[in-house]
Image: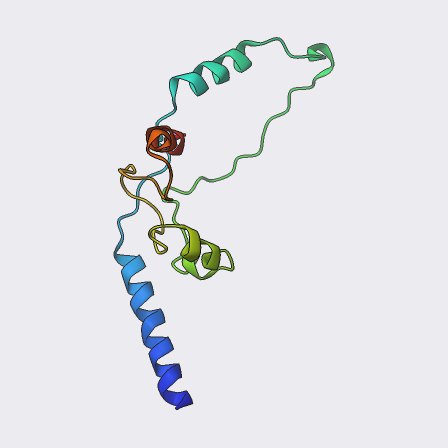
Amino acid sequence: MKLEARRKAEEERRRREEELSKREVVNVSHLVIPAELSSLLQAAAGGRQLHAESLALVQAPHIPEENQLTLPLDINNNPFSRYVQLHFREPMFGMLTVPLETTLTCMDEDLRQEALEVFVM
């Protein structure tokens, strides 16, 4: 009996990993920045720094960048997954490869469009 249950669990784990490995990976280095956030960032960059005369400029160390950022295949197996399975429509959503068309959770009709716009940020 235990052997059968262990075999089924292993088969289910293998099936989930296979499903996750088939998903397309999106390059996250070119994300859309909403206009409001862009203007806030530009305003912050152009603002005067406090204590600018006492700051010392130093050369930052060079850190090699990774060309392709990926999520681990077992991301749905962490402790948070139980919460996700209870409250989200699709518990095995992994990393999204296209913009959302519907909200992740059930909500009122008047809040749906705003929820989708917030997700873009």
